[in-house]
Length: 158
Image 1: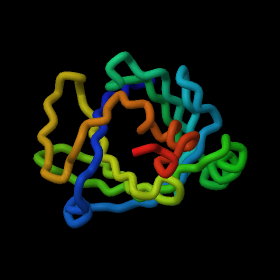
Image 2: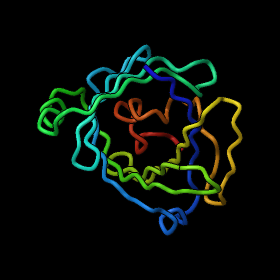
Image 3: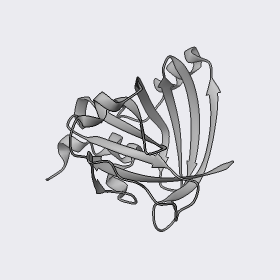
Image 4: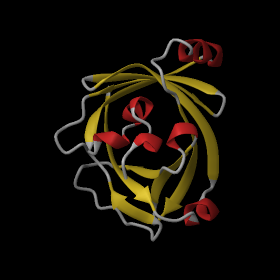
């Protein structure tokens, strides 16, 4: 099992799209979305994945993560067993100042939400922020994908 360390940010412009070197559609659901552990089924670029994530630490920066590629047909079958609410998004991969940002543009009930994540080596690693990066939302549980399946962005009072 590995330790996932990441920061999350809102995105304030579409400039990232012209900088992206790849864009991939992702559909995912949760077999379990309890805070102590999430079990996610994901179809990413016509490949299936099963991911288990532990509870985030107090800062929301890191948590344990285990991921395994599974056959696409199995991922499709498992998606049918998931809790209500699916995530549908396009992930744009953007290299900026030798850092890889994963920018997710959400659809359906999460339409209008665009978030960027960056995985880090340590919690103290500095992030060089591009102009299109907005407010940091690391640790704000509302922005966890598992939470977005239960209370989508379209239902928030903003």
